[in-house]
Length: 140
Image (tube, rainbow, N blue to C red):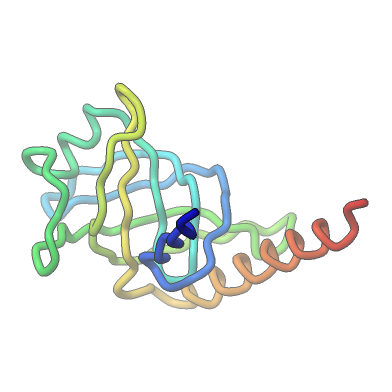
């Protein structure tokens, strides 16, 4: 039996599953709201329908290396349970794939954060990863 090859993590960062809204602003100023499916320190995976993909990815062709699509992102992360903060980050659409008839995933790699955005994501991802490890350790 042949061993299974592991899929490389395209972001080189651990991802955490979250469900929150994200606003994507294109270079022309048009804004779209999508759903986040997972987040890492270096990027975010969003889920959207075909109509939104057509607006974000010209010709619905997956971006090729060096031909990324520049966007600005805005989303909330809870730094403290009662204190969510808004993260503003520039990024590039670097990945696109269809996962269902009218459902697509788009990967955005962060390139620059406004203010303390990276620190907020770093703390939030670290907390979720620690919570997951503790749940796995405490499971019977």
